[in-house]
Length: 153
Image (cartoon, rainbow, N blue to C red):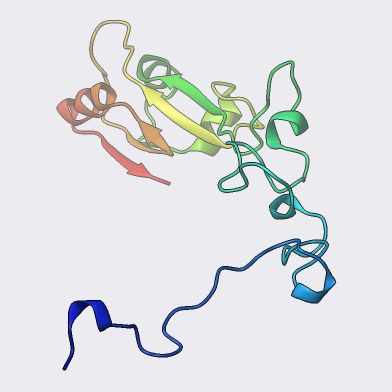
């Protein structure tokens, strides 16, 4: 007959606690199962390292220059006013980025060109077909009112 005071766990279900650092005979002497050196062999907290820690590699905060930072992936965008384009290109139906560079409205080294809406009299006189990388919403509306077209490069 089984009673509460005679209940026992199955044999092999419970194991004894590991007794670390108790001499050579224990099998867990010296380093107590933690191997040698390294972050997790040390005492104290060794869970998640602090933010910015890169495993011993010099951190990003220490590698970057402290007097400003120049983004290598930046986009230098040269801007041109719609009014300047309509002034310089009278009698021309289409204008490309190459034409803008040739007339000196945009630097020759410019990689990206954006057309802005500033117009001297508030309107574009000639319906132009413009080719550029970007255009502002206001410039696009003014261009469409005259019958001009913008195509993105």
